[in-house]
Length: 138
Image 1 (tube, rainbow, N blue to C red):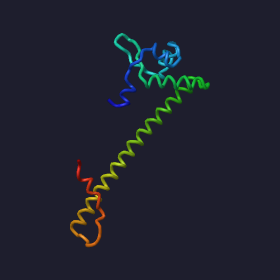
Image 2 (image 1 turned 180 degrees about the vertical axis):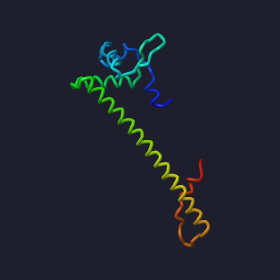
Image 3 (image 1 turned 30 degrees about the vertical axis):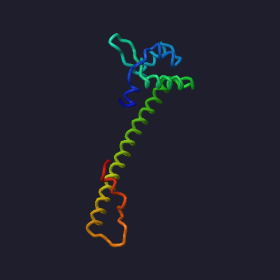
Image 4 (image 1 turned 90 degrees about the vertical axis):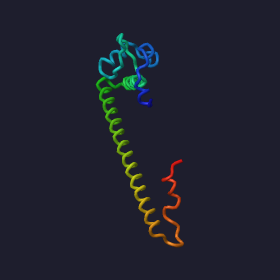
């Protein structure tokens, strides 16, 4: 189970969340009504909050304490979400670049190895000396 799945797992009832965040149950329900959080519901309709929900409640509380109204909080949370999504896309693109660079470097290594094996030069150390470990897995 990865960290993201753990952080989204609904675990905490509203009583625990109110103790953790120093918010009242009324405030928590109000933030839910306003669409700022979306806790899971059990079959008995009990709210269960995840670590991410609790973290978001802390963020909401902090922004409101700084004097930002609810509309401003919504806008800031939405922009933060958009930034996080954009960062995830950038990370995916960077991972692809690394993969392509690795593939190119392995292709280049194979080309050099083939050249050195077909056309050895006396008295010269191969350019790929020490790189053979990539081809042998322990």
